[in-house]
Image 1 (cartoon, one colour):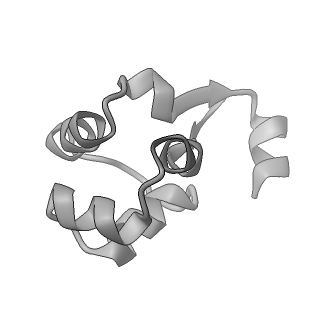
Image 2 (image 1 turned 60 degrees about the vertical axis):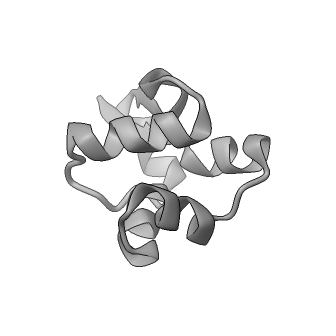
Amino acid sequence: MAILVNLDLELVRRRITLTELAERVGITPVNLSVLKNNRAKAIRFSTLDAICRELGCQPADILVRVPDDIAAEAD
């Protein structure tokens, strides 16, 4: 099983740019991009909390557990 990040979907729903979210959360756009593009190996709970606070969503709206074969297709 793998964890996929659907941050791009939430950004579109909320009509907010990656750069704007990065500024609000207090992390670099590059680090947020790593997360958005499913290249992150980990995320701090404080960062996840800040993202959810700014987007008005729950962690489950951003993080999704999928079978490995589906995750490989997403890469």
